[in-house]
Length: 410
Ligand SMILES: [Zn+2]
Image (tube, rainbow, N blue to C red; front, side, top):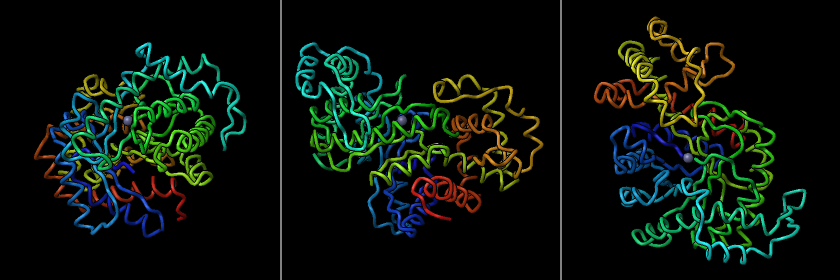
C-alpha cells in the first residue's frame, strides 16, 4: 500500500493503520511513495521520505517489510532517488505512441506471433482473438515506452545491484486506458527487457480524480480489473515474470465505489494489489487542523483562501485528474464563518454527509503548495495539533481504505 505523505510528518499515524490491519490478520507492506513533482512543490528531498519511514518503523517497532518509493521517476531525475529509495516507479507514459525502431518492432511481432488466433486465458470466460495486426499495433504503440523502462531499470540496477529494489512500471498517466490484451503484450515486452517488474500500473477505464470517488462505469472497471489479473497470472507463467507481479492502482485512495469489485477480484484470484494513496493524508492533516479550532482552523481557512486566489496556477499540473466546478466552491467569506466542525464536514470524504463538498475537497487537495509556502507556520501547527491530526490520518487509511479493500468486517 502506497502511503504517500506530502509533508513527511504522518509516518507513524499511517503505520498505525497498517499495524491495525495486521492485528486483523491482513498483511500489508507500507510503501512511502513521493514523486519528483511533489518534492519540487513542497521543497523536500527524497532523503526526507527515507528518514520519515525509518523513524516511523523504529518508533512503532514494525518488524515487517517496508519500502520508500521513488514515484513516477524517469532517467532525468532517478539519480536523486537512488540512495534513499528501494522501490522505483518507472513512468514511461510519455513514450506511449512514439514509433519504435523498425527492427525492434519486427522482432517483437515475430516473437509474439505464436499468440495469433484464439487465446484461452484462465479466468477470462471468452477466448481472446488476436491478429498479427493487433500485435503490430500494440508493439507500435508501447514498445518504445517499455524499452525506455528497460533503460531506467538497468540504470538503477547498476547503482543498487540486482534484487536490491522493487520495480514498478507505470503507464497510468496516459490519455487512453489499456485493454487487457494490450497489457498482455506490454508484459511480454517487459519480460524481453529483463525488467523484474513486481507491480504494473495501467490506466484503468474511468476517471481516477484526485481525492474523490471513481467516476465511470464501475461494472466495466470490474470486468477489466478481473481480466487484467487473469492476464498477469498468465504472463507470470508464460514470460517468467516475478511470481508476485500485481496490479498497481494509482490515485487509488477514495475510490469507494470500486473497492468492493477490487476486493472480490483479489479474493477470486487470490491475488495481491498495490494501492497508492497520496493526497488523502494531507487532507486529513487539514481536517485535524480545522477540528483543533483556533490557530489550526485559521491556517486551514487561510490555505483555502490562498488557493482560490491562485486557482489556475494550482489546477494546471493536475488538469487531467480533477473535475472542479468553480460555481460550487464556497467563497472564502463563507468559509471564514465556519467553525472547525463545518470545515471538517465539508472536506471529509463521507458521501452520506450532506455537508460534504467534492469540489471543496478537490480544491484543497491541490492546495498543498500554499501550505508549503507557509513553512514554519504550517509545520509547527502539524506538531502542535498532532493529537487531533493523527487519529484522522489513521482512521482514514484503516476505516475508509484498508477495511473495504481487504474485506475486514466492522
Ligand atoms: Zn501515478
